[in-house]
Length: 488
Image (cartoon, rainbow, N blue to C red; front, side):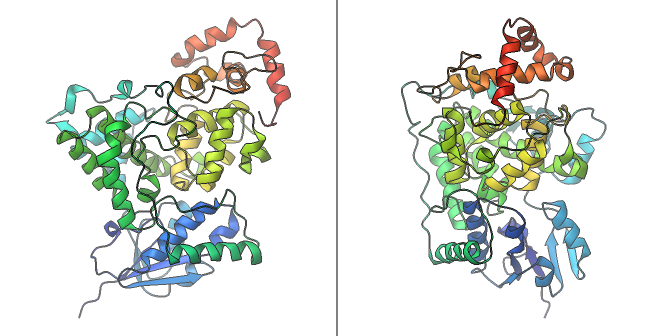
């Protein structure tokens, strides 16, 4: 009788779409060596191990706990293309391992290369329109539904005035089980006996570790949160870290959900009249557009892209940031967001980009070190996720290969899009003095430091004109130089 070759699943390939048949035998490998090499967030380590061990309870599965992956693969297996270069190189070295094309993404590598080759700059908007057409998502024939490709302009509302929370239904809570208890006990023992170090706070598991949990979260989001998602997807409230976001990125990046099923459900909600077009389009753009885009850029740009540093940013991450010491920070936005990373291993995309990434870029921290920090400290962080997201978009270290301008902003942006400035010791309107907002002062110092590199960027023409009109610029620069790496 024919027996299908066992499928080796990495810890980010745990869903059924990584198998050729529901009955295909599976190999899972749990390697402690991964956690010896780098200090990951404690809750990320818990989530990954919990997902692996829960998956091991399903079907014909061998879970091998080994020092290294190579030691565990002792039979002929197939494996879907891994999501990192190191894992791909390992797979290529192992005998009796046959690597298949990647799964868990929507656009194929061949189609992306065909689209990308010959372009001077690669932009999300261009790729997103290509992907919408190619996969027939939110389309009416050859035209986008509603006549517009991008409804971002409808999705930039600030948080509601006077409200501490958005008021949307909370996602279904995760109920931990004996597997979670064992994972927590093992992590405690690794710290105590093996010298393995984690960052961040331990805590109850907040994100799905099983497909059933992931599907429940997806259904709840589509039914109860997607209708409210769009208008304030860029807004921040100090007491409401979830807002109306889906919280699905950890589950999708573990492979528990197929991104195609996620966008299909979001589109169906719109077409059935249960979600507005702007919210459905904005959410679909995050997955069909942005997620696929950064995955393909990871491979397309090649291994040297991670070392890009066009802005010559070489400063080390200060200890208070690297160690998630939110209590050392007085700036309310940065303290609150850093506490969110410490306590949950997750904040949504605007705190990542405009609070954490913006501050790091203003201060000239090493882009590679910032990317590594995001990779280790976020429950949905992987090398492929953070390379283009941080190196290219957040830190503008590639000089504009995949983003048209640096995402630098002063305190006025944070004041408009959040309630963090209320009650903060710093004033977003002030750039000089004891109550000068570190983002406002840092913004002008960043522009002054990089004016030669940025002067040709038409999107920065007006800010650079404003820079030249500042009569206190020298004092601002001296102030920011003195601030150095100290916590603001």
